[in-house]
Length: 282
Image 1 (cartoon, rainbow, N blue to C red):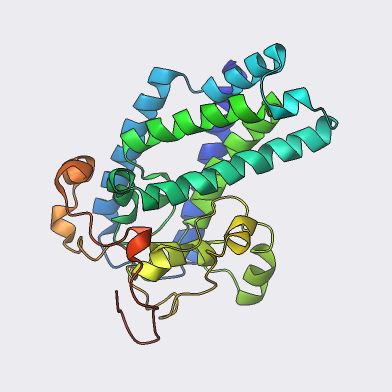
Image 2: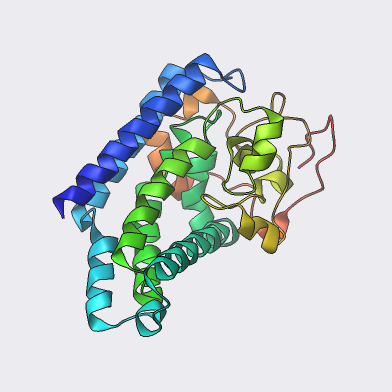
């Protein structure tokens, strides 16, 4: 299974470097907070997350997929549609699960407390795409393992999905400029930075939209799609209303945030007023 780790690390560093250089030379927005401080916090959280992942085993989902295939667990192991169809169906099924999981982290107060660590970032760039509380990572892995056992996707589908999810998360959080005409075409097939950036708006209605990570279709199917932020991408405010002090958003504060910080009014059942142009109504 060593090749799985090598493949994931190669894909990770390749996409991270490409996105970092893209942000450097062709940024979409001017950063509001100190990049040095933000990157220290975000990269430290990412390092902590990786320690948690290695405790459980980085190839756990792929290993389970092999076991499920051998034992005949899951829908796609019971009903074989062909190699390529099963891989595509497996990847689509896992992506739908991740979309629904994301909704769950916004809808359930206890899970939102974990997820708000991701949203509390005062800017959005490639590192934001990997900034998740370690406990959220553990829950996410558990959900993914349950989905693999229930769906029974081929191991190739699970590996491809894992690599793709990691890459698209860095891509769609990137502070990069893409021409509007190209973005309109891209977002028919993949979640683009302009599409996902809306989800990081401080405005509640915009935060509770565009939950997709890989494929953009679930938001349209389930009615959570919002094409653009009310204030536009250059003027929209990133983050959460209750966390605006850069000095208080250090590493320790981020790790402890779920246990003592104010969760605010971002739960889906408190979605606030419809955002209006030139307004930051919550």
